[in-house]
Image (cartoon, rainbow over all chains, first blue to last red; front, side, top):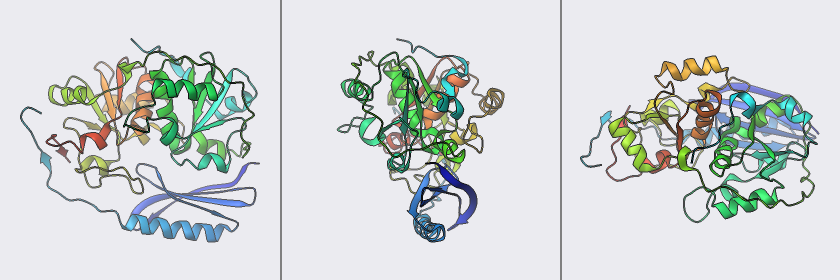
Length: 83
Length: 283
């Protein structure tokens, strides 16, 4: 067996740049969604129909990404004597 | 004890090299993924799968794999001290590099990474299997005493930060470096504070790779790190969040660029960013 129909594409999901990787092994399609930085996978999905698998993965990834809290605390550097 | 350094690019093998050596009894291929279920989807024929979360760390305290457990893992995997171990994995070899670093800590002589990792093997439509490898004759593996000259602990990082004794290279994403986010989306390990170790330079790990997952050329890598002042004349400590991405950068600096003193700080940001009263720099 081999991975076939291997494909990568870049998109934005919930405001985050992601890479979507899909391929088929035998009769099973695998779709994984990765954040562009640092390149880690966020969700994976698999099943017999590529469109369904991709839709499910996109939805789960968007849900996960929309929950990320962005901090905007003050810039600077703390300095603790003796540390 | 100084790590025995494999020099040049012999630490890096191509996917075609691996394919040609699938039946070579002197070579053992091992898959180590971030996604511990990936191996079961399909792996290189004959490859052993290691679960980084269970088999490449101490599962009681936070630490690398203990020596006795390491020896057992190697023996069970049919690896002897003379075996050429070829590691590969997902996310451009993050945890394969983590495994590489631990094999070097325990003194394994011949360890290599498959350039491009699992992604490249899949993209090239090379042979996969879901079968477990045939039972290997168990080896009786005896490791060296751990070589911590390639591992940085907190006191050394504190000294590097306050006295600039080593370059600190933060290999996380720019958003983690600035403290905008505490952990990459979808990854669980986090911290109480965002930002970076004072004095650290931001050189994200992925800048060392091409789009297909393979490493950039030595000249390109020299430009990347040298451009940030990391030339190898001064010791370097790489860190990330839990030490896996920084293993990747450690590999690049130590083996592809041949810098003499490079350490991986596996405590990384999940240690520093949770310390009470530790200085933090932003952005």
